[in-house]
Image (cartoon, rainbow, N blue to C red):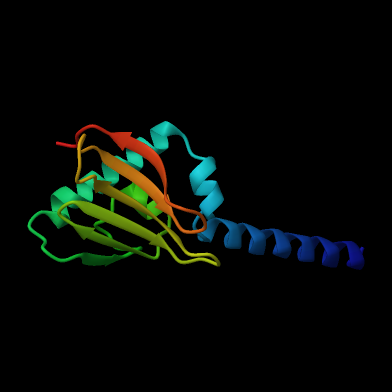
Length: 135
């Protein structure tokens, strides 16, 4: 009986540590790039638009926010970023894990002047989502 109890306690402890480690870290580059839906990317872009509207308007330099800042939209905060840079035309969300990566929401400066959600890091930049207009 004593060995079963110790084994159960160790199993429970390992499960708890794994759960805490897994869910307290940001998603990996591959998980963010391949295991999210178009709807998720659209909502993430909406969060970036909200940051530009509330923080970036009038900024000539980038404004840095920590990943746990209470002003962050829930979708961005829930992604558990390390920090976010915001200015009037760009939001950069950075994840510092084993292999650093980030997501950028910005307006292309050439025709057709669309907004793009682009992931960068372990591979060349890759556009995840595009939107015609945010305002």
